[in-house]
Length: 547
Figure 1 (cartoon, rainbow, N blue to C red):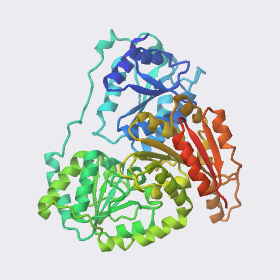
Figure 2: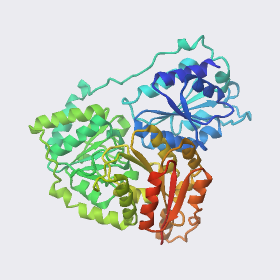
Figure 3: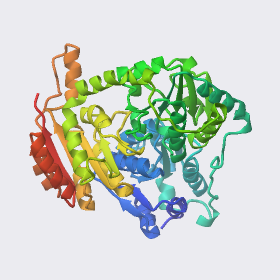
Figure 4: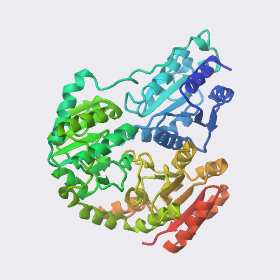
């Protein structure tokens, strides 16, 4: 037992942590001793990257920071892609790993798992700190948890030198550790912001053609409720980023959905005279090109100064947590308009862009429509076609997700479509489904991906099987990396390194302790999906696509 390990674990527990994603290694064993002693559940995986994706999904679904514990060197560097994915989507994940001893830190002495600077490497994707004492370590842990609701979420990294982790940490006792820091948790729209709030509310209330764009920063329950009521009050169409899909029930007449990347969606925003942007960086990964909004159109809400001016420098800016600012904005707009009655009718100027959007969706992703409709029907059961169950859908940066699930799986709640938008990684869908299932917040979790994406993390089938997680995993197989192949053909490049034969995924699933099969038609898919839903563990369905 060591004081530093016990102190860090005690602070995790004090901040409500009862589950940690972790893989033990030579240099982090004392942390695992402390975790076991504290009764904190440890969920392991077969690769740190998959571990990080599971943590990312767990955090998205629960709204709480996830914790990942790895070992030095390759353990923590294997995690970097997952941490970058969390950073891109502002998902709070805390990674904890040992670092080389103080005596050899930065000296390149050939110590096992040595890097020139492990903490500097991690600092490229996370807020990073190398702790030299119990006080520094627990202060950092408390700051990560205290920042929820006070700063943009994202990846954090705490490095614990091996010599301090394995020996005395140089402080008298765990009890001497600092108290929990929750700076900013009670923040609200300050008096300094009153004029800005009134000006922004006036701009929205006076708009002839208002629209709303919501990113992940607007997915909290109070912000989401305010978005709906404000949209209904103004008759404003609501477009979302992929990470905010479902923030407004997508069956609502004002819900346009994930449409920033559609030409019709961009045309709608160009026609709007005022656009309220809540918690989005408006990045090229959302528009699939440059942001098309104009500075003079935009009223913007973001929790950080940099976020307020990312890609657009708006005329009206409100800095703070959308959970507090959006209800305040709703109140001020209602006071100016003089009523709060819900209209909720999509105006003609916006509705005129819907046919173009529908045409583009069908043209680019229609191949996936029938399969998604079958899955939704089967999960709805006897609901008369209504999609009642609360389902989490996970995906990869693959066509099956961004041309399929993004459009053909309507959602009524945010944080139910888990897709690595922004960083655009492969290998996310399966481990993310594991993390979402462990969160226990939804009725069902379904992973939808392609064979290229699944092969990046296929070993986590063994993790899902070992944990007994009943996850249908639908894999669209089209002969390789079709998106990249199409890009090569479009540029006149002979397709290179993009074509490969998929393994027998059903056989592979059984080798990992799961189950599965291959289908080649919609009819056979329906029967297979019924078997997957009835299964007591993970069940892989490979859908062999032609062309």
